[in-house]
Amino acid sequence: MATRYLVLENGQVFEGEAIGAAAEGLGELVFTTGMTGYLETLTDPSYAGQIIMQTFPLIGNYGVIPEDFEGSCLARGYVVRELCAAPSNFRSEYPLDRFLTEHGVPGICGVDTRALTRLIREHGVMNALLCDEVPADLSEVRAYAVTGEVHEASCREAYTVPAEGEERFHVALMDYGAKHHIVENLAERGCRVTVLPHDTAAEDILALRPDGLMLSNGPGDPKENVFEIAQLKKLMGRLPVFGICLGHQLAALALGGETVKLKYGHRGANQPVKDLETGRCFITSQNHGYAVLSESVAGIGRLRFVNANDQSCEGMDYPDMRCFTVQFHPEASAGPHDTGFLFDRFAAMMGGEGHA
Image (cartoon, rainbow, N blue to C red; front, side, top):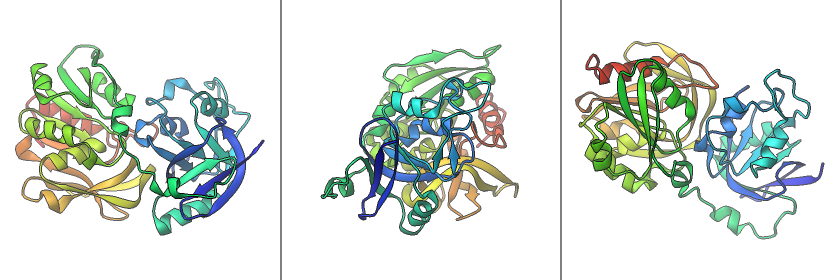
């Protein structure tokens, strides 16, 4: 393998072996702690603009299984300790290195991912460059920012996914970079899902006469989505709303709340979340770098879920708006399925049986 370098914005250089595409990759370096689910991670549009580092030391051992893809691969790079060149799984179609190459994702293996993870935990996420020659000037690396990625991650035209079995509800899903399993979970519960581009106007959404509105996950800084927030302001209180990840953040901003960037975010399939209403703790799958400040929507919504590690907001209920949102991923693939009941809660709201 050829030599490749991971250059951090602070000037530190990690030398390793090149994997994936023969290209440079500039992005925000983040780490994810999942022991499995690398395919779902790489195909999660929420990673747009970022270089993904896996903390688990061996990646690629079950190969590539296209049926497990969550969406488009929009990652800027991939960092692993060891890449398995000979995967073993009856569902595997080809090795992970080929996937990276075909999707234009440069990567590096053979680097000390534990040292890198400790570095990010101490200093916070930072920009990085994957390259074959270390540049003398790092100004471009330091100036990089994840912007405009929701437009890249969203669909260009609306499309419809039919309900499985008898149709019970019609859901309008705002695609900010939606994972496929969100649509599948809705369809499994008898929902016909109309998937809409991120820049669909509120009036056009209401014209579809949906029973409920689903706000999907997506990449980047939630505050950047000014038009999308303005549309949600017009929609809140008009129909039942369920938001996930970026959708959770946009709903809070639409209701006058605030969001803040976390030091290194929550990414992985093992994030503990406590339900303040029941006292129960769930193990959740997450991928986000921003959080809602729950106190900023006090009086409008109530804090429902908190992260058991850092007490950050993981979910809000807005009873008067018939809306609830969560920061974690209840569709959870790959990851725990503990919180799949939230889709049932959304269906109950659309049926007039439940409340936020």
